Length: 443
Image (cartoon, rainbow, N blue to C red; front, side, top):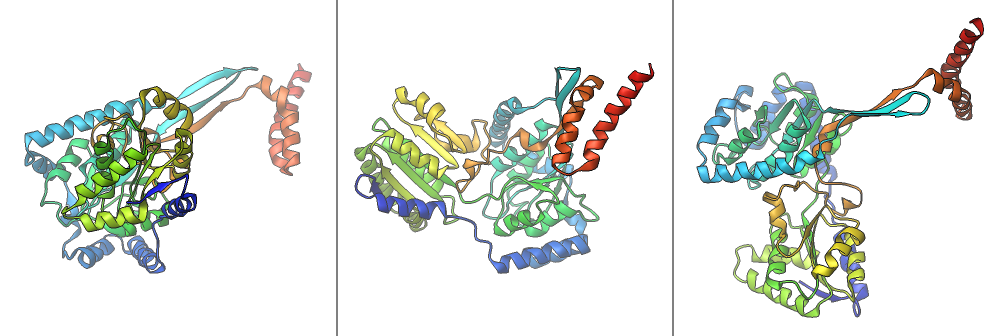
C-alpha cells in the first residue's frame, strides 16, 4: 500500500486518485445482450422462462411451486437458528428501526395569502421487491437494511427474491426474512428475478420498486428495467476513506482499512488521508503484518496496490479537499476532538456515511448502529444519499387555489402561457377569470 506525500508527489497522487475515481462496473456488450434476452423471455413466457433459467443457471429441475417459500417454511428456518443469533438479529433490527423512524415524512398543508392552501401528500409505495444475493454473498444485514425502512414507510407488499442454491443450507437468511416480516419470498436469482419483479409472471405480481445488491447481471437488469419500475441504485464496489491526524490509533485505522479491502470484488478502495507521517508509516507496517499469512493475503494486497493509498497532506483543509473529491461511501473522521465539529459539520460535503471518533469503526455501521449501510459508491455521494424511509414513499403536491387568487393572478398566468406559446394553458385560467367577472357584473 503506497504512501504518497502530497508535498513531493502531487502528480503521483493525481494519477492514483484518477485511477480510484474511474472505478466503475463495466457492462460488456455480451452481458448486456444476455440480460436483455433474459428480460424479454421473462416478459413473454413468464413462469415458463423462470423455470427454464432456474435449470440453466442454477442446475435445478423444478416447477414454479417449488420456488415459492411460504411463511411456514420461513418460520421453520427461524426456529432452526440459535437463540443467541436470533437475539443479535432482533437487536440489530430494533436499532435500524429506531434510527429510521426519524426519517418518516408526513402530509402537510399550509395557508398562503388570498385563501390559497398548498401542501404535500405523503403516500407509501404499494409494493417493493428486495433482491438478496446467494452463494458466497451471505448478508442477513442487507435484508434488514432494505426491508425495515420499507416497513416503516408503510409499504403494503414486500417481495424478496434470492437464488435457490444454498438457501436451505444456512437457515439464517430465511430466519431474517421471517423476522423482518417480508410478505412473499421466491427462490429466483439473477436477471430473471429482476425481470419477474419488474414485469410480473403468472405466479409473481410485479412490484413498483426494486432494491438490494447483486452481481453484475443483477445490476445490469436493474438498469434495464429502470423506468418500468424504480430502483435504488447501481451499486459499485465498497470503499472507505479514513481521515486521521497524529492522535489516531494506528492499529485501529489499519484494521478499518482492511475491513473494506476484504469484500472480495477486486475493486474495493481503502484510503488513509492523514497529516501525520508517523501514522502513515505505522499503518502501512501494521497492514503488512496483518496480511502476512492471511488466507486472502494476495487478493487483498492486489486490491490495495490498485485502489488503496496512504496520502500525507500538509493540513486538514488539504485532506478535506481530497476527501470531498473522492466522495467516499464510508468516511471515518479520527482527529483531535477540538477539530471534529468543524470538520464534520462545516467542511465535509461529500460522503455516504460519516463515522465520527475513534470508536466509530465502519463495521459498527454495517451491522449495528442503525443508519442504513446501503450507501452511494464510486463517488456518487456527490449526489446520492443512503437508502432510507424516504426511498419508499411518494410525494404529491397539493394545490387548493381560490377565487381571490385567480382574480389576482390570472392575467399574469395567461401571459406566462403566451411566452411559452401554449394557448389553452392560458385560456384555461383566463376563462375562469372572465366567468368570475361576468358573475360579478350580473349581480
